[in-house]
Length: 468
Image (cartoon, rainbow, N blue to C red; front, side, top):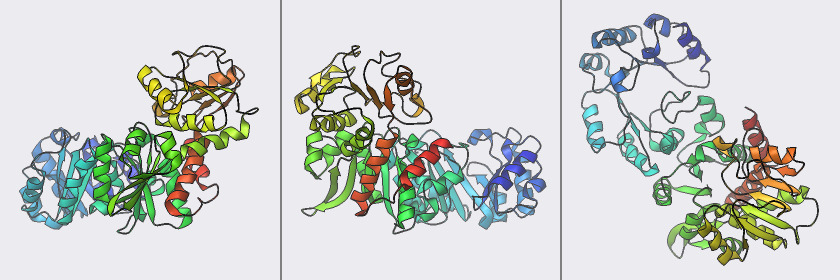
């Protein structure tokens, strides 16, 4: 109980706290509620509903009755529990909840209607989702009023961040107590939770690695500094069609596109500029209406974003330099176009030869062996995901050899990637992907908003987050 009270009082960013008594060994309801600095929801979740309480239902009923007696603002009661007496006693203070950790049940709407017939003034429905579009059914439930709706898991993260747009009465933050939860401070500071209103423009990053992206931190800091009513959230679609359908329903204004959707996004765009067509892939989309059709316009800020930090430190002229590019996805296409424009001699290396053959045919570069041969490059560029996110200790070239001048690793994260660390140890110049990330993001911001990104804001936000 002492731990619970300390955590309760430390939750200063929240508007309300949930007191999870089912995780407490020495339950004392009076102590949990005494001198609380903000409103509370008292919950004592049984194991059969994903909680930790192992006592009897009579004991659990007694605990929740006591919470009502002591003036708890809300008491959470499971719909499947036979606690109708508690609902009848204080319907305005009962949150009647239903959790499905396996997926979205077919009878979700009927379940919500049945929960409302109990008389409880607030219902809570949390379901595990695997697609962005699976969260859309929650909007209809919330629209009927006084509902808390949550899509659990990475695909449902936006339902937490955009609770105001989903119509949810409130949402939950925490240290991964439930799938997809993040601390309240991150929801407010990194994702602009309190800024979301009916007219707020929505942007996002589309990626299978969206939850690890620094882009939301950077763009939300820039929107706030520029006084623009917009927020930017991570979106982890199951496939690109999932994003397109979700974006249409949620009226998303623009998106950053990364692994593995850059080719899909280019194919789906109604319009693209000349550079983007040359690359054949896009990292940036914005909503347009073209010839009466609502759709997407594409650009590619990776090309200039890649060159800006490289130009600052590469020793010599790129013209004639031997460049080995590792990987053959959408990022590699932008990198190759940038290098060819500077006169570099480019060779592409990838495990999947069919990907390399596609680049050879589209962009006219040479196909190189995998693994890469020693003494074959002046500049090595890593366009694979190895080294990024949770893969910081992985490398596409473990142990080298590093016989060239410079290694440019497009991944970023806390500390140096293994590739960068080993290249530096071998005497090479080395650059990670953070400067490129910042440079391309500033160009995205300008393309979306028509004004320059506030100077230094994105870099400061990114570096601060990496130091946390």
